[in-house]
Length: 116
Image (cartoon, rainbow, N blue to C red; front, side, top):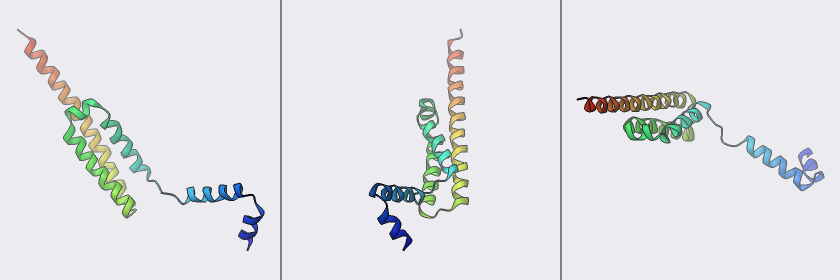
């Protein structure tokens, strides 16, 4: 009965604000580890060096991120999602290091070929 009194005693804007605030509070729960992994993966995808020289490693990171997203959406399995998010970040780092090593190897090869 108190809620009815509150709703009818307030202007419509106040009621809409209350409904909006409650909707936001009940919205999708985010997992910080998953968000961090997603950010790391997106940054790597925007790096042309990684895309060119470590596409396979980057693809593996994307697969583990996709699985983490699926688990979070369907099951909310925090432990497994955090594990997969950790793997995603490590696979992104592997892709970054792989790309750096391949660029360095290419530069060494260029220098060697320029020697008389």
